Amino acid sequence: MNYSNINVVISTYLKVDRSFKQKLSNIWYKSCAFDDRCQFKYIALGSRFFHSSHARRQVKKDGVEVLLSPQEVTVILRKNEYNKEFPYGSVKSYDSNQLSSNVPIEDTRCEARCKMTSGFLMGVFDGHGGPACAQVISKRLFKYIAAALLPLGLLQKYIKQDPRELLIETFNDRAEIVQDLKSIYDNSFNKFLNKLLLTAKDEINIEASLENGIMELDSDLSREVVDLYKENNTVNHKTLSVALSGAVACMSYIDGPHMYVANVGDCNAVVGTMNEDNEWFAQKITKEHNTENFDELKRIWNEHPDEERKTVIRRDRLLGELAPLRSMGDYRYKWTTEILSELVVPLIGQKAIPANYYTPPYLTAKPDIFYHRLTPKDKFLIIASDGLWDMMTPLQAVKLVGEHMKGKVFFNPLKLPKKNIQLGDLNDLLMHRKESLKSKPKDRNAATHLIRHAIGGTEYGVDHSRLAHLLSLSPDVSRMFRDDMTVTVVYFDSEYLRQCPA
View (spheres, rainbow, N blue to C red):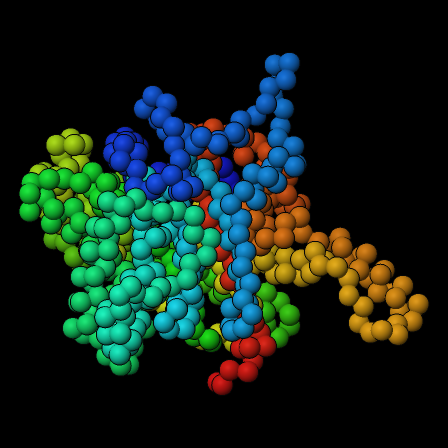
């Protein structure tokens, strides 16, 4: 893989103004929304915040910098990896991992199984302006979507339950929301359930349910700030920090052979398919909502007066500031000037109101919904933040996962095919395994495999020196070369899909 550092710097440059991001982060950390069980713990050093377990600096020995060893690199890369297997269904297993560039990391992820209905939910959330919005969305969104997927009878049953059964079973869920926010969020969710009851039907429209869950949660992020202010002239700094920071989201809902992908922003989902000639093909499901998408540019231009054409998109950014053209949160680009003046300017100053802010809202969280009918040729799905896609193409990612699938079988012990195997056959089997072991990947987890190659990959394989250098950079420097990376690889069961009716 050939990468230009200049291209990486340009494509991964901060999604929001750096000084504004710092102000948002300060609000968030002063009233952190997660308790001590949360994996996000911070220590304050001056005006910056650093991860208490952060130790990626190069070691100096006799005045000479010493690179991280291969073992130290592997420990860093595998720190956040996770995998889960399932006994039956179209989803056989998934691998997931993330690697920070920002400190703290602004990406989050969530994977869950619907409990009252069928289907899996897998999502990646790429935050900007701080981690607040992405963290909160990853904890709340799938519950909204699972409720929206309930037919009328099940919805009525769920609302009447006390205590209520779980709507979703989450995996790899390490964070807990603090109690005062939990009560606010529970109240918002109960109002959402009552609103669903007014329109629920026995037949569920999945595309509409996915959009409804995303849009209603995004609206609640605003209401949880504005309604309190209107009631008693009080601003809750925790809910405000969530509403002002933002996150793009890419999530899939997989039920048997039916796969739906909802996308808001510039994360991407790609299906790895093997064709009749046993060659890998990358099917990009999503389209980014950025200035490279001309349909998005036309949509935004059409939503605002002609005299704003030169200001609404400047320097390939919304109002010259925001790179993604759709996102959740980011109410600095959605609220009216009056609301911003009353709620945000007193805390942050006049920069809270973007330049040329005449006809809000300029931003929406409305997702694009894509449907894909899974076939036995579809082997896996990759959902990842733009930190990965900035460093490799969809086809490169698919080929890497395909090679990983072939090689990872050698992590398992050798099983003889039959009891009475001949000595010569056994020798041939062992020689074949010895030769094939050359393709055994370094990492059992496919998401880790992708991240390793994204950072250290060259035309000739992974360059340890490149990998060690990039993992040793301080956060301020690292962010110039790469973004946070979050990757989830979902494997499909070909035999199950083969038995599904066409």
